[in-house]
Amino acid sequence: MKHVWFITAVVFFYGLGNGVLLNATPQAVLHLQLSSSQLGLIGMGIPLGYALSCVLCGQLFAGVVGKRVLMAGTAIAICASLVMAQARTASACVAAQLVFGVASGAFWPFASAWLLDFQAEGISKTRLLRHYNASWTPATAFGMLLSGQLCERGWIFDAFYVGAGLLAMAFVLASIPKATQPGQSFESSPGETAGATRGERLGLAIVLAGALANLVALGARGIVINNFAELNRFIGGGAQRMGLIAAASLASQFVMFSIGGYYERWLGLRRIYFVMAGGLCVVNLGFAYATSTPLLIASAALHGAVLALAFQTGIIAAIRHFSSPRIGTTFHEAIVGLGGTAPIVAGVLVTVLRHSGAEEHAALRAPFLLFLCLTVLVLAVQLCLIATRTHQRTLLPSEGCKQAGV
Image (cartoon, rainbow, N blue to C red; front, side, top):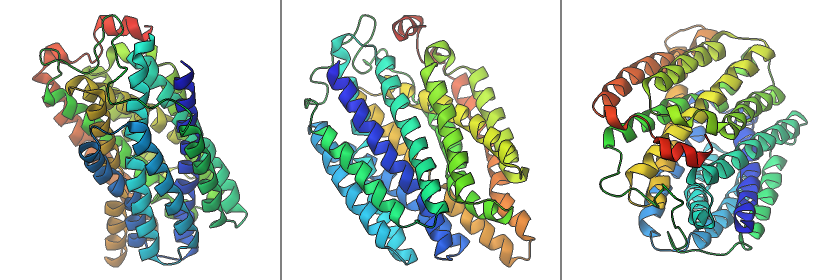
């Protein structure tokens, strides 16, 4: 159990550094007076690099000890943060963000899979996932709050040095827990298996429905973190409010992850997809039209709850579909990265509308209204997908729920 707590601490410090960098990046772009398209391009750097890295690392390092991959990724992330602190052009920012995304692809999926290797100690799969989720969410929130305070005081590029220091702490802590081969110490608790056996695997349609939930929820998150910075400035907000919005979303995620045992039994059912879609519609309307900080924070908190539901749906479906936990977590995290590429679409849309003569406020709102329509379309697709696998809709069967503490 002590190894689980050390890995949880590693995830926490990496999340802190990650949060600092995520919130400082759009503020650095605004400070450099770059365009909306460049803001979107830079905001896409991390998720694009992350998605590609998850796929490549999952293939290249399938048989490599996860601890070594994770530490190498952390070292590269530290270097990327230091480069970002010196970046003063769009190309340098994009390069640093891509490298950080690649580094994160060697961290997050391997961190969650490393935790799952310790299920042999009698801890259920869902409890280990709660360790993971309840660690990175508050850490990223604290990192964003810290970054917001630093940027508000004008220390925008100095914030990246702070992020690098926090990542260095994660690197040091990662050297302490024991290394495990993929699946080496993974032995099932009663009623659970390491991966999914051929007869127990969830159908691809169920996994795709969960992946779509992540794509649309994380796409909205990407435009909130990056593109909303312009709209926030237009309505009179600053870096501190951006930090509060991001922190509120992650705090809500943390609460939802912590009480997962009460709702995990319903993951995969139509009611959950309706709840997620309805919540995202309200969130997009909130960020498009709200101007007061309390309303924006409320929208962010609702978004965090939806993100938690989407995240849990996606990762549990992926683990139960693939033959090993690492393949499942790698696939899930690749989807997370892909969902974060939305800022480039939003940035291009804003630029096109400006050039077409649209009013500034309307142009800045457009990405959120686009994602509202996309959410409704995705819900229709999800309902069609799960209709073909009615007996597999519940992602955690009753036995699994008992193991989860439900």
